[in-house]
Length: 58
Image (cartoon, rainbow, N blue to C red):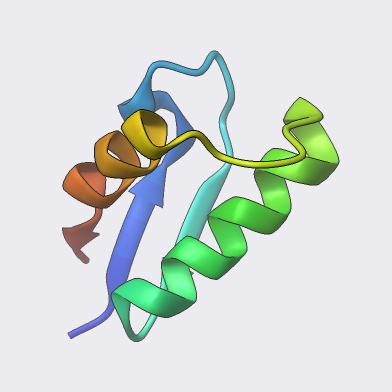
């Protein structure tokens, strides 16, 4: 089953939605988006935990 993550689900005021077949694909897309759009050079461990918890089945 496909996975989905909305930027808003982790507290950002952003309409971006990451989709992928696996959690890893979603996390990769979300990390790329965070760097390009939110100027996050790295994702702190506490934010990564929040992101992982927000990934849902589509």
